[in-house]
Image (tube, rainbow, N blue to C red; front, side, top):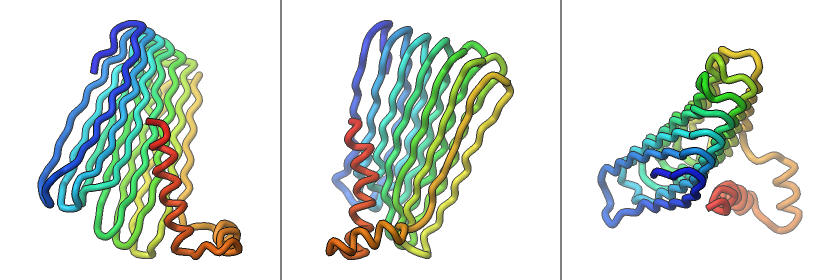
Length: 228
């Protein structure tokens, strides 16, 4: 996906299958030139027998903006990675990922945003939110790398994981690497079950605990879907 200077591109990829089993692999490269904007959205709806491998690479030019929206809702095993190079002055990157894992489904995410020495005053924001049920498992590596010379840059990563089973396995590895003094980096994670306050509020209005869990799970997906 190549956005020429001062252009705007909106690309939506919907991945579906017509069989029960298989391997699906996709690699996407985005190059946003000066003052351009790219919004890439991926919606993965493969059948439960599939292994899904997804790689996305982004390079942002001066004052360019890349947005990435991702919904991982199908496939038995998902391995996804995103590498973003904010290689120029005031380049920006923002991503929103939502997932839903149930049964014995797995998801492994490795997202890296690199501010190199030419990319002064760059900004990145990575948000991941999802739900784990039954025996599902998730691994998330989120890395913001401030390299020497990227002064004035900002980076933020946020993760929310809703656990709906004591057997579900969550692994969260947020990382901020810093080789420059004049930068701002933040990360935060919220992991756990529905709070007693939320359950009490919904149950007082006739909503069962199971229904409340479904509502909150759908809300995380809908928040990302609304961005497409």
